[in-house]
Image 1 (spheres, helix red, strand yellow):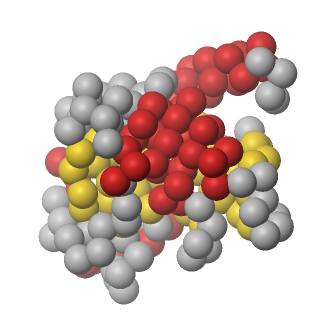
Image 2 (cartoon, rainbow, N blue to C red):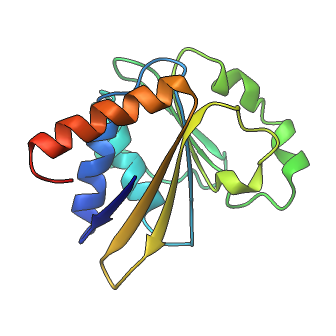
Amino acid sequence: MVIQTKSPSETIRFGKQIGRLLQRGDVVALMGELGAGKTQFIKGLAQGAGVGRSAYVSSPSFTLINEYKGKIPFYHIDLYRLEEEKEAVALGLEEYFHGDGITAVEWADRIPSLLPDELLRIHIHYTGKQNRSLEIVAKGKRYEELMKKFGMRNSECGIL
């Protein structure tokens, strides 16, 4: 599925719509160039998942992982500062991927062998100054069902 957005607020809105469908144990892997809108999308995911102060969601600067409380724990992992995949092993990512919260990973393409087999993969591309193209790939039955629900909700609204 490919979604086009025309502003950061639209990117956040689509993240919010997907975030409403997420459940405990879900993993969302984001990829894209620096400044493409990954953090904006994650703000929306967090808001949709019930994180009350999602406006404060930002890329973790020094800790690499931020944990937010909400209806379901929300884990935001930013791997931008990683130089090698083996550095991520020490972070204990397996605990997040198989834990009781929702995990969103920026720069997920830096840890391909560590990612779970089943996840929601989102690649954000620049298509203009404010415009973005969000390529969404569901890997696994759970995520295929999630995207069907997302597609039905948005087609009813005339968005897709």
